[in-house]
Length: 118
Image 1 (cartoon, one colour):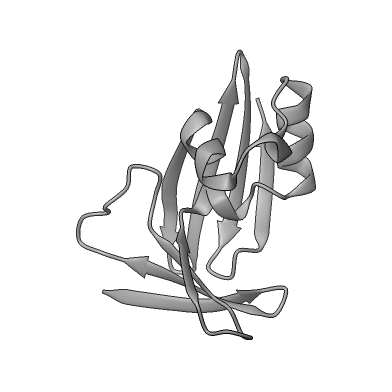
Image 2 (tube, one colour):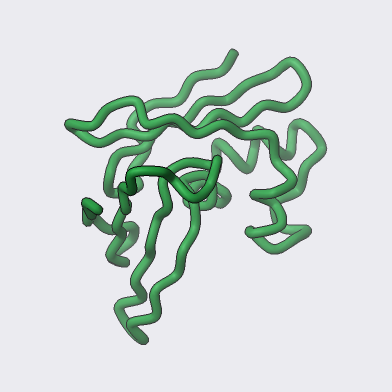
C-alpha cells in the first residue's frame, strides 16, 4: 500500500492505494484530525461535497447536500471516480444528473486541479 499525504485547510490527508480498491467510488481517502488524531475514512467524492461548484451543480439539479449526512449523499449520487494520473497523482470525480455532467479533478492534497461541464 502506498500513501500520499497532503492537507486540506491544514488537516492532513492521505490517499491509500491498494491492489484492489474496496469501493467502486475510487481509492479510499483518510483524513487525520490534527486536534484529536481520529482517522476518518471517505472516498474522493466525499471530499467534494462542500466544494461551492459541486454544491451549486447539485442545487441546480434539485439536490440539497445539506439535507442528509455526507455518507448517505455519497450513496445517493450518480458518480464515477477514476485515477487519471499516477505521477502526479490525480483523481477525476464525475457527477452525473440527468443530461448534465460535472467532472472535478483533484490532486493528492485534495486541491481542485480542473473542472469540466458537459
